[in-house]
Image (cartoon, rainbow, N blue to C red; front, side, top):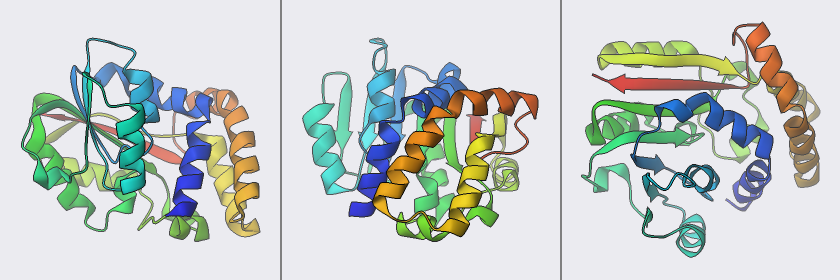
Length: 227
């Protein structure tokens, strides 16, 4: 867990990447938002600049939970140390950012989310892409798998969901992860340096994503609309 905490901290200071993520899904974020597995809450910290929105953060890790209580809890941001099965409120937006790959029974978790989602509202998911990239790094941070678009298409069909967005993104990240798999970037200092270089390249990756029509990338974004 300490290794995961370190890596998450490195990602949270990668402002260009976090901004790119938000750019991809911001138009689907409503007024009453649930983020599952909020970690250090960096995304919500940015989104909460819109004072019209209300956020509920679920976080099971006690260290992250304590951090969120100390740094983010407010009238507009409620933090809970609970699973989705333990709450019954309804939301117009539910967000999973690099979370469901950490969950063994991922479809059961998404089913729980749909129970909490109001009709005509959005479920936003970002996950690591392409199982071919699965490496020691994935194992070390607790990933069960990486994903392909087919998983999300099949899940939409089974649950009568409308897909508003489904695409790969961060094509340069794909090649960085591919190379790091074979040179073994498991050392903390190497990870930090690699993430800094990758974050610097995000503007170029964004440009290339458009050129190749989001046909390849380190990650997948899926946005469902519950009918």
